[in-house]
Image 1: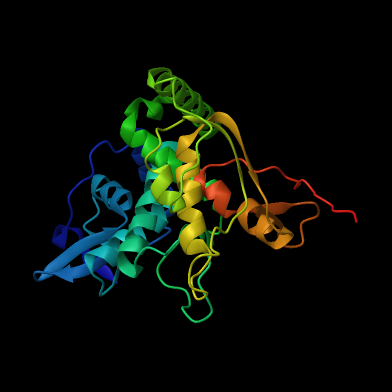
Image 2: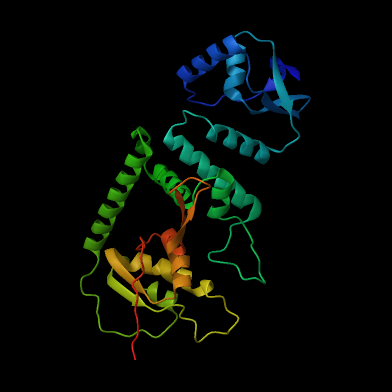
Length: 306
């Protein structure tokens, strides 16, 4: 429907790219409005939900009315629509894209709750929203989505990363910074951490008492569950331990785990074919990769002979 532009309320976003806006204005002038803006009724008039640049371009062209879709939605739903619309932009800068992805993930978890780590039991069923759910919504792999979320966190720590031209370079720079930080942290730790000791206790509780990047290597045989009630889920105890192990291991250290092939696929992730495209696969991150470990593509096979 046609709505008077003067009746549409909106707060203009700071830092809008004037060159992009001028190009959009020229396109609308020549070909008209390709997509309607979205508004909602508010205080006897209308409030803009999506289509700020299209509305600004129309105003600069001197339009009095504009084609709009009126939707009955709340502010959270309106933000979700804007996020999805912006993520579909062809010329979106990489840093803006990862911030939008993180915001969408946060909105979903605020609405549905954060999913617990690990696989839910059959009795419990799936509860909450996970990274895998956001990846499915955006039709991307879990690995690339995890990288985007990591980049968004890095941008909050260092906004100068926006000056990096491409995402791959930004990822390399972040990894270099993390390596340097770990090396600096390791240099400040005491070098006389006593070895040849046995600590009897719950794994996570013991590991939390050890300093970060203080352990050279680890050999373990999960699920560390023999002394607990049979109804306890494996993941409730194993995954928190792995997170602590990642913290205490030195950079470049090895973690060797005794496990079956089914558990290996669960921890390491799997590659699945993508549609009918030949030789193209999508990697689904395993639980250890989500923690931060780099897992070998092939397990070490230990064969017993009688």
